[in-house]
Amino acid sequence: MGKMHFNCYQACEGAQIVAICDADEKRLKDSGGMAGNIEGADKALDLTGIELYSDFDRMLAEANLDAVSITLPTFLHNNFSSRALKAGVNVLCEKPMGLNLADCDSMIEAAQQSGKVLQIGQCIRFWPEYAHVKEIIDSGQYGKVMAMTLRRLTAAPTWGHENWIQNIERSGGVELDLHIHDTDFVQYVFGSPKAVSSFGAMRPQGGLAHLTTYYHYEDGQMISAEGGWMMKPGFGFEMSFNVVMEGATIMFDCSRDPSYKICLDNGEVLTPKMEIDNGYVPQIKHFVQSVRGEKVPPVVTLESSRNSVRIVEAERESIRTGQRVALD
Image: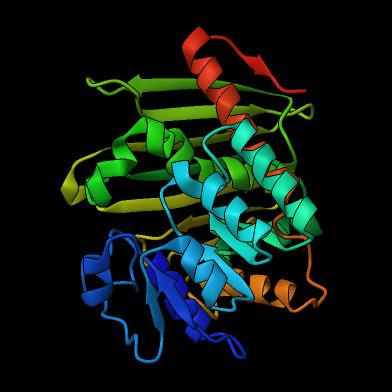
């Protein structure tokens, strides 16, 4: 993810990368190393003219930063984001906001006290197809939403440094690392649900491997999301949604061609073309504009980023108890 942020800043006019910090100094010497599961972040980086650090506080003190991207494992988000904010540096921190609500509250307090920008990397809100379907839903041009299903499925992520992603105490597990993308988007489109009903399959070594959640709303819409790390390596990656509206069915599946289409009552099929192929670039541009003091739409707020963690905690409680769990 650090490589992806690097590439996006380079594509952002007026932003200059001046420093990189990594506790693993070998990664700084070999920027062509393994880059996880992010397409487009698999090439070596040109680090010419960039200061390289292995000590975060030293970088904050010496590099004269306006902003920093925190692309660290989830259990480090609160600590490093808060340190940067207290040093007077604006922060873009990767999702999820924190491991728990206490982490989120600590980060919000640090941002408020510093007066600096803190943005959480809920990139799906900026993903072109997801952003487009939200515009359609908000416009009401095809009537109201009757049902929406979202899916995010892949093999177990074994590529993380020291296997941190599968360590629930470091990543929060599949529900907080993977599934939260769709929980967050549901909240973004429909607001916070009144309650959740969740069902999960457990890993032999403990922790969730696969889950499905139904998000309850007062108007009876059927909204659900499925996420899991149980797929075999040959499966690849599925990121998809289907929206059933009064006047259209809208689908997106990253593995299909065309990946995005709108099916109308008269049989016509529209295939809108997106100008970009991911949400990382607009997310970075939004952050840079915020740091510059430019007026930007409230795509991601600290309250909503915190609330996504809160909803996931309710999903965990529903799986644990086998009961529907209400949200305040």
